[in-house]
Length: 181
Image 1 (cartoon, rainbow, N blue to C red):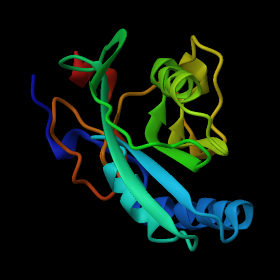
Image 2: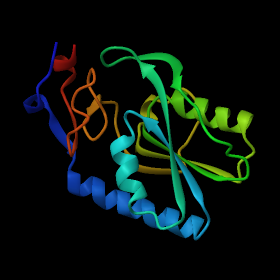
Image 3: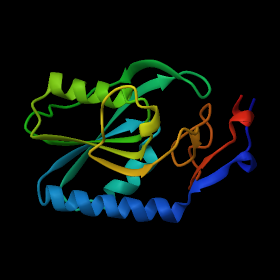
Image 4: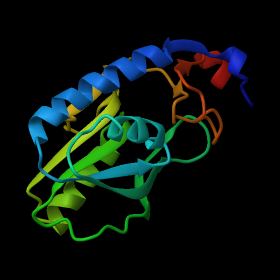
């Protein structure tokens, strides 16, 4: 079943999201200072967040993009991380900032952190997620930076999609579970 934007309830407004991004950027600007950072955006969900976040960062910065997937069609994770496209330059001795939209079960975050550890000897690796859904975590992993704690709802908007739609919304919303079934 396809949902409509009118089915969504707003959880985080555009203003709340932008305010929190500025706060996160302030923390990162203090941590990194003038050191170069390689920001690795996890496509497709984190693109809106990553774009707005890096605009607030003051250090020398390069951006890289990778594509992973743990969702098939609909609202349920497959439980398996699929590396759709994970080509990265040499990240040895670099400060790496992984930018993700949501840490849910923790599988994607753990996959990425393990991938970095196995393939590179970075100067630092930090994980930043706009949303942290601790209540559904099955793998022990915590983001170094996160925007908001969220409950177990299927979230849509600001990069988060429902069957590929609604990524372009300026806010994050949710639909009642009865509508999603």
